[in-house]
Image (cartoon, rainbow, N blue to C red; front, side):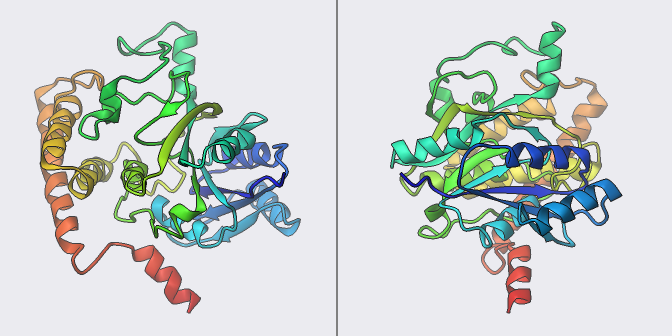
Length: 335
């Protein structure tokens, strides 16, 4: 049996050693049929990284694309147009991948034609370190879960019940995590789906938005804990064009949540999502566990409101501007 070609796509921005290590782990995979596409939006690398990437590209180990803009969904779309795989697999540029990772993704598509996307298990380095030292942040941290609760399939509140870290049984899920997810090529070709480039900053919820649209095709999104990796969780990079500590990040964080809801959810689902977003991220209640300082709550409330207004503007503008600025730029250059 000829195994399907897997296109492994690694968007990167501002990463050095973790990027090199991630590529090494991919190239060591024993799966016999894959290609690696690195979409590099770093202005200037350290000499060691530059030399490594040049060597791998010259030896045809990777396809290395240099871009002068930073957008995670834009990078994903750019690579999809240049990939050849029957399976398109996305990982971050700061991951540790065990042997058998590619095969674990592939088997789900081979064995089940109803599967259109695979969500892999993600071990977060920081949480693993905390667990090893006995530190926890909430009642549900570091507990083994066999099957996710029914709420995890409700688009209004699922985002607070989906746990792709501690869940140990294969099952259908609502979404993936962007650092470990794969799709059948026809999701992009037959159904014409693409990542929405209006999800800016750290692009939070861009994969959730995409997966909600994948579900409309009739395909299942399948969680396979055997397709696991370790996410190192660097604060910047990976096409994050702003620091998570910046005020701009706060604005885009709320904008992206509201945009996902306005695009994909019913009125009732959206209200539940926005209420939970306010309760957790503005008021700081569990599972967010944020400071309850009145000044900080007020500040987060301001960004929450501004984020909603900005997302509303994005939806209104979609009538004449779909926000796919990087895709249009690429097509103009290609012409």
